[in-house]
Every structure is written in structure tokens, then in C-alpha cells.
Image 1: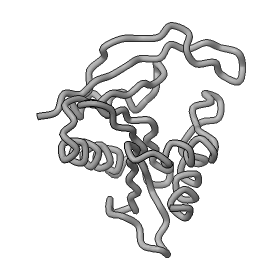
Image 2 (image 1 turned 180 degrees about the horizontal axis):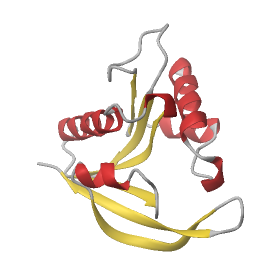
Image 3 (image 1 turned 135 degrees about the vertical axis):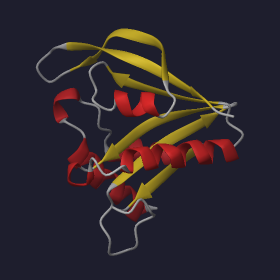
Length: 152
């Protein structure tokens, strides 16, 4: 799993704008993956699990609770964006969650995140917000929006 954590960290470093402080550090990722209710997926540029010598284009990390699963992180490296990999990752998350008998997916993101249109197109809808939740490096406060997606 250490190699997979390296892959997650590499994508996160490229994909997450440090201005918004959304990226996790290695310890946070390692701690999340210690528990049996955490799941992750890596993809190469074709949307498949990357082989040893292939670059990782994207990933997601989630945590399952009773009948719900929270998408903690999802990232696609900028070099691989606009190729359907974000949608591919969300479909893989939804499929895995269905296999785990999850009834609803949850995620939280900052207001203005360009990924919102992707989430909405994959069945997510807004269910709440946290005012001034995110603090940027410049001191600006940004609301967090909570989304849900009902699964069959």
C-alpha cells in the first residue's frame, strides 16, 4: 500500500491548488487507510488501475459508515483532465459503494470548486452548507457545500 500512498500523494500535489488548503498530508492519508471501512481507487490515463511503470492519473479515497459512504478526496492530475477520468472515478466509486450495500454517497467541497458540475452530472445534489468553512492562504473564508447521491 505504501506505493499506492505515494501515487495518491503525487496526484494530490499536482491536482489540488494549495491556495484552498484542501490537500491532505501523508499522515492523514495513511491514518485514513488503516481502517477497514476506508477504500481507494487509482487510475491511469485509460481509467484502469495503473501498472507499476505507468503514471497515476487520478484517485479517490472514501470511508464507509452504516449505509452511507463519504468521498473524502478525489483528484485528477491536470495533465489528464478533460478526458472523462473524473467521471470514470465517480462511476467506480458508485459501483464499489453499491457492492458494499451503501444507499447514499456524501461529499463536501468548497463553493466555487469547478468539479461541482461533474458531481451534479453524476447524480449528486446539494443537501447543506457550512458557512466560512474553508480558509484560504490569503485569509479568505469560503463556504463548504455538502452533496449527496442516492444509490439504487
